[in-house]
Image: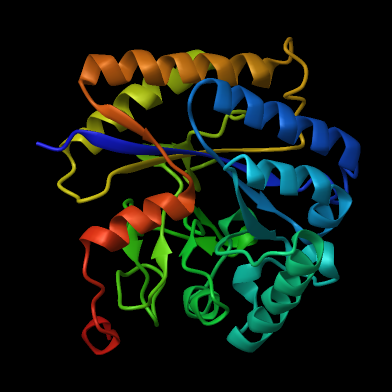
Length: 294
């Protein structure tokens, strides 16, 4: 039996957002987070808002050269729109994300291949638009989340790596775009049943995260799927450059928990970026035709 489980550490880079607006702190947090993850032998995918891209491009280029993946992150409210991604039509999303890609390319000199919407907000147009714009992987979904105010409904969405569907975000399908969902626990619903517990560093202390890591490793080990994946997340609006900060302590203890519990469950943790997980899945899984998906 294949006991490999890919693990992706992701950080949404949005320190320029209204309400925080401290690019310097965000830059320091990114560097520190990446260093902690790299020292443990793991890999980071950074999902970066356009304004953050433009605030510290030299650091992002440096990290890209070190093997970090730099993807696009997008909050419409930070670009002059009045709602979350899931509230907009296909043509509106095409324009919004297309403009963001141009800014990405101008800042870094490369094109993004992976994408995460802000707040995991999406609708049935989001996947096909993402594919049309050239993305080959994404991490838009947070299975189990049902937060209407964020335009984020992922109830009954697949909890595993899959090809996305051209007409329905909750189905598997024939787009040449692979979704790598944020890892969630469907048995632990928070916020009046609207949000499933996830492996967000800042959400809980290390003790609670250890319980979930234990459960998720066991779940993935038993899952009959060609590429198993666990995706953590956090934000660069926390002070990972401060070793005494609660989130830094939690991050380090989560890493220890992953190592300890992987040994206990006898699984192999495979460090991977989101695109690397998607690539591994693409290599072993035939993409359904669009007609079959429809």
